[in-house]
Length: 349
Length: 166
Image (cartoon, helix red, strand yellow):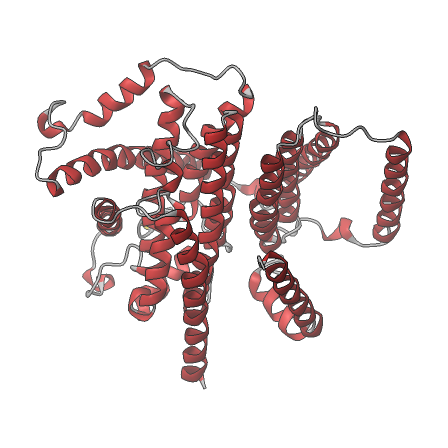
């Protein structure tokens, strides 16, 4: 019985890893909200939040505290259990996605190597996609359980947007998998370390994937599920207090995780560009730390691009959104897939 | 009991309980949510049987796509227990009889398989991984595979044709 052979040490290691990744997700998501407001201020030539702490550094804590102390309203005619399940599902799904992402090079110790990845399973990237496909329920259940026609319409709008953009996203992914030949996240990274980053070979695939990631995270220009000024807010219209906070916070965690997924798939994961770091002869823990920081730098850059786009591009109309997804991105992704398959076959023969 | 036996029993109880709740819930939305739980339990069983790919695809396709469509339909038509038409007693009886007959056929078909000895070859079974699966699909089972893909394509074309406005 192999499963039973897990040692206490193994369990402790994984529990510690999971706890630190969840903590990291929350921390990054908190400070992404601050970064968003700071960058918005910078782009609009104003200061942004600067009252709480030096440079407004305590602002996310103040925001969180405010959400906790707000009155919690549950609509009388709503379905109580499902009303609670909606934001809970949104948060759980956002956190679960990060399990298969390799955050840094494994630490080699005398007792064996400690992987900085919760689970390096063979299905790797498909696990991310399965969790993302379940993510729709947080929106749909929350919107329906509010028993408000505007919430329901917004929930259906949001769900159909997410379902539509999953298709070109997976088609763009297939072209990447053609090259790496594995679904395992660690092997995708080591392939890129040996052969160069996937973005060089798959620029179109990266573009499609990035656009779809914007839509999956409900970010501008695709933030129709929460169009507060023209569509009467979104599926979380009836939510208040920390339940609303969960929905909004899950969005930032989704941004963080999808940036990490994109960094792993296209930007070489924790690979340090232009150098062969294996020759440096560094201490293993130092090397792991550096690779982790490189991964974080890539993630932060992608998060910055997310925010940059939000304060640059206006919102799409709903028919434009569907048109882009089904009539432009899917054929483009199919073309990209066929082209990469043909080139790979030609190179092999 | 080994860990996989404990997992098997937990998953079986979860699958049976949620499947019963699908049938007995009065509210169609609750039925759909219980059905999603059932799919997750079945995916767990697939993992115990070394079919990792099947488990993940089951979640992506059934729990993630098909059940979303179910929810769409139920939410948009606003089905609930008040608007549900009363069913005839004989309709329920016919449903019970046909369901029982299906169960009988399934049990008869699966009775002689060697599932029991195949279960949980942990860290050994590569049968469920995509590499083996892909090689099998494109060599041994290539004709059924291509035929079913043509079937899917024709279904898609049909759906587009029905969905056209004019």
